[in-house]
Picture 1 (cartoon, rainbow, N blue to C red):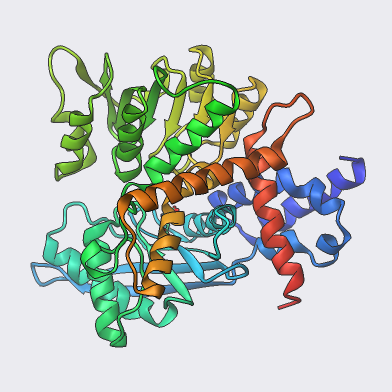
Picture 2 (tube, rainbow, N blue to C red):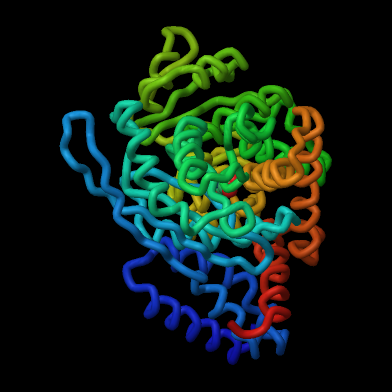
Length: 450
Ligand code: GLU
């Protein structure tokens, strides 16, 4: 970029930071994308005149609301809920709901922003949104979780709908919570519509939705390795997290012949000297309780050990898959991975690598795939759930699994299209950011000012 362009980029960052004080995650996500697309904007008069970057850095709307509910002991509890509808340019708002004490407006704005570009990469007609509350279902009774979900939906229902905004799950929101949310939505609007995805199969859910993010991640990794004439089989993989994404990525990795060496929670790492078996992972999937409790229950004296307060990133591996949460893998973790010979990194979570970590991978020429490309399988399957609901049909597992593979292969193709370097190597982050941005920015220009 020339000096003038660099100055403009700096001015844009200052504008962004001033408009979004105390929102570090949101600023981080916008910078990660704009760093790659700025040269494209500078070269395109339509994009400049339309101020695409500035407009796409402002959510369409942020809805914030009180969630009051009654605990089992009769006390009244007060939480805060949000829905960030980031962009409706290329389809109905679409994105998950997260229940976690760390949830705040910055985190949901970053997630809504990421979702817009992730959804664009799927090739489907899906806008971007994210929602949630500063509520932790862990430690609450089933009845309390139901009352919380109902109270949350008592406000959210007026903002969603099958062609308006379609929430789904995210951290701590899975089948049980979606069931309670959907039930309350249906009662309030007196209409059976696919206004949420991730539903149980019995009432409009889709096969493969539960597996889709983790399986999709491994389908993307398979494409990436095949692109350089390598195979997933026999590769050593470190995975972080113990939720839906981590465990289904582990299952698919094992199915493809890889060795999965780690899983983790916020309290430590579970390590298997020889690699977890499919049975180990299925046992974890069937267990209830906190991630740490479930992981620790697998420890044995021969092969499986637990390491308090550790992360998986000091374990030697070929592939690292951060599948837990934002900013879980920092610059020093990246250095350890690189020193230990890690050759590929693909994000299963949303923005799990810090800016420092991404720089370290780039400097060491370790391909790093951003979540907006590699974890898009979940929302893509949600798009297929919406299509099935709209047509009142239900496809079988194999059909949907095949469609998921095709979607991930197409996302890989989009990354290689816009991310090819002069030496023929692929810069995945740049490819993903540019391909996604062009689709959304073109829609913004075409739809005029508003
Ligand atoms: N929460 C998932 C994501 O981050 C899925 C969203 C959806 O299915 O709408 O992409």
